[in-house]
Image 1 (cartoon, helix red, strand yellow):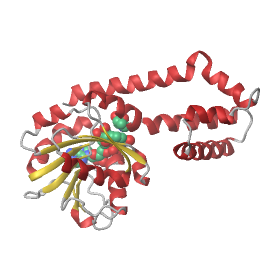
Image 2 (image 1 turned 180 degrees about the vertical axis):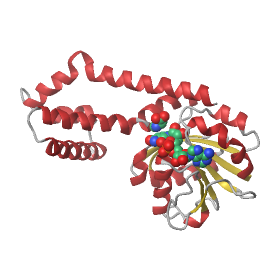
Image 3 (image 1 turned 180 degrees about the horizontal axis):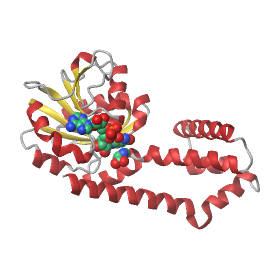
Image 4 (image 1 turned 90 degrees about the vertical axis):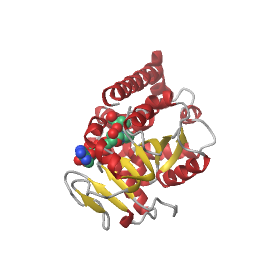
Amino acid sequence: MFSDYPETMLLFGCGAMAGAMLSRWLESGLSPDRVTVVRPSGAAVAPGVRVERQLPSGLTADLVLVGVKPAMLGTVADDISATMAPGGQLLSILAGVTHASLRERFPAVRSIVRAMPNLPVALGAGVVALHAPDAGPDECASLTALHKPLGLVEWIEDEADYDAVTALAGSGPAFLYRFIDALAKGGAATGLDPAQAARLALVTVEGSARLATMADASPAALADRVASKGGSTRAGLDRLDADGALDRLVAETLAAATARNRDMGRENG
Ligand SMILES: NC(=O)C1=CN([C@@H]2O[C@H](COP(=O)(O)OP(=O)(O)OC[C@H]3O[C@@H](n4cnc5c(N)ncnc54)[C@H](O)[C@@H]3O)[C@@H](O)[C@H]2O)C=CC1
Ligand SMILES: O=C(O)[C@@H]1CCC=N1
């Protein structure tokens, strides 16, 4: 359990993604009385967490997490500047929006950090990719510790990679959910009861992913372990692999998401 959480934390926006991060932090020992959430709905977030519809005047925070949609950054920018404690840290989870453009908008903020999480952080089984060019070694260590309860922490040194990381890890859960759905639909198309096919698909993916994380072999090698020579898995893999169809589709999917991240950065920087 990480005990060295910032003294005061303020979240602008607490939707799907920031909400998932916060719930895991609270579960991992963050005291709710350190946290304030500003959200237009004013709806409660978790017991003990202060929620405000608008930024109360005079409130400052050591860590400010920007959890709104990238297009909303301009709307909350003045409030972000107003609430940063001297020496505070700004944590942005906005897709596409670069460190340089954040620095231009918030010149007085000591430290600006980009974090790209994904939704499984809610279970401590997510990914958080970090990029913090302002941070020295101690601050990097403390950022790693802060995000550790959320899952795998990866540092991205070259920000040029960030849009691709966002496509793979940030959007990745959506692509995998599509695959699970396709597996279930495929099962139904071969005659299974759709609800039963959906259960089989979900747990097959869950178990296979868990096994792959613990295995002594790559996912590609594990696929070959399932496929007996001349057996049915090979017949299926041959179809998936024909003309590199799956690889090509996934590469095109990630390229489209990467390009959109780049565009969102230009639109909202
Ligand atoms: N959903 C995901 O899986 C991931 C999202 N992200 C990033 O997280 C950010 C948020 O995305 P989601 O959580 O999916 O969106 P969301 O729509 O669930 O959450 C955004 C929240 O911002 C609130 N909001 C709008 N205007 C506001 C204002 N003026 N002040 C305070 N709060 C305001 C909304 O009420 C909403 O709850 C985006 O920048 C996105 O790029 C990053 C990685 C993964
Ligand atoms: O769809 C989006 O724009 C964000 C980026 C990563 C996940 N959701």
